Image (cartoon, rainbow, N blue to C red; front, side, top):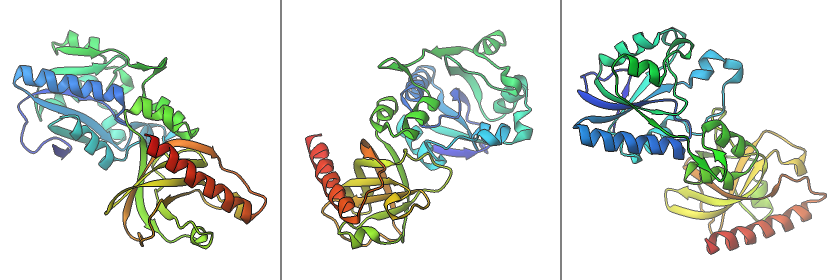
Length: 302
């Protein structure tokens, strides 16, 4: 997949497109991408996704800027896996936000010949969200609308996934994403308390832009340069030791190599219990041992 920052340097020619933030690349987004790919093949066109960086809400409502489910590199990789051939990343700012729907489509038309727009059921674009599927049809653009996706009675959309992740309901979030939720970052030095307690952990620096599951203990997986390992994961403020900044720490089962400086991906499979302030270090050690055993049992059982 080719990634373009702004319009492609050379026009792409006939294109079937879908437009959106696509945060999380959840099951509803994936359905859009399948429609784009299928329709593009039938029309002899290029399948294109058009997205924005940063998230438009971070520009228009900075006080309500969401923590992202997928950073741009993650989003691009998932869109690529969906079969999209060209990803146009619009550098979004207040000036761009003032484009009317007509100005937006004219701008886009300089980079491709839009043969069809694949849109979600709630698709809007342009200044004051004035562009809709009906607006496009009135101006001669063929539009294919994809119905709302529901899983177990839940509408699949980014804010729903974000809410589930934030409350630690990672199993339910996975149902809407079609995969386990993950974070990644460089392994940095922490207080090394895990090693002192007999359970060395990788302290993963996730950053502030990314949505992190709510404080709790989780069973999951950690992917390193050497492959993937079961992991007992802690997200929390270390209340037993007086609190601190939110940390994501993963104890990789049956593993004791140095991971400092490596980028490690942590996938969350199931919440084990809330973040707890234990009455003693001994009680904490006992609980970590139980978490490791439960992680092994859950992940071995599949």
